[in-house]
Length: 79
Image 1 (cartoon, rainbow, N blue to C red):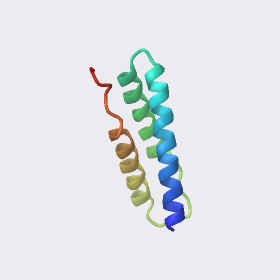
Image 2 (image 1 turned 30 degrees about the horizontal axis):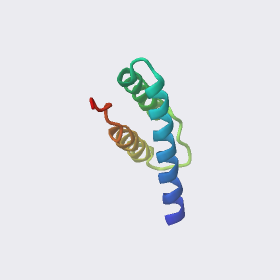
Image 3 (image 1 turned 45 degrees about the vertical axis):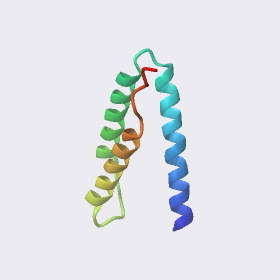
Image 4 (image 1 turned 135 degrees about the horizontal axis):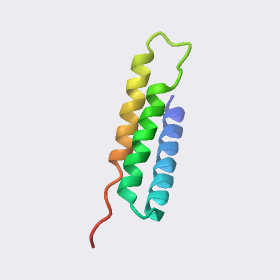
């Protein structure tokens, strides 16, 4: 289980870096991040989860993971 958690964390870090890189190349990075976050949340809300008794709990964890991932991204510094 620790290996799986480590891999998930690594994927989250890679995805966060990729999103940040694309956002930095965008003319309006904050708008890009906001739009992208909203799209990801819509995907999480609409994804079909089969074979589980409590899909609401899985969806809730996925939503909180998206929120956590985007909370790590801060606006560019003014320095």
